[in-house]
Length: 115
Picture (cartoon, one colour):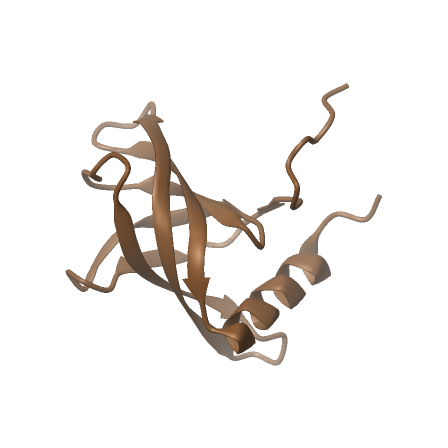
């Protein structure tokens, strides 16, 4: 049995959630999993090691709409994926609006598998 050792539980993201680099206005990948402290991205383009990014994505609001999340992040690691020109990338959240962070935490808590 694998024991989860992260401080914040990670939620798998089953839907296609594109992630946009706010500086280039281009989609750099999609969410794979997320927690209140960071996220795993399936990147579809090159990323700079140990870089800071300003990213944007949307999450469901539970009423048929979407909440926009803007986050300052730090790229902690990346490694090639099996698909050509894709990689796995682990980010830590650095900055996020308080209301957006609360929306993100609520979304994660509402969708975590029940123990």
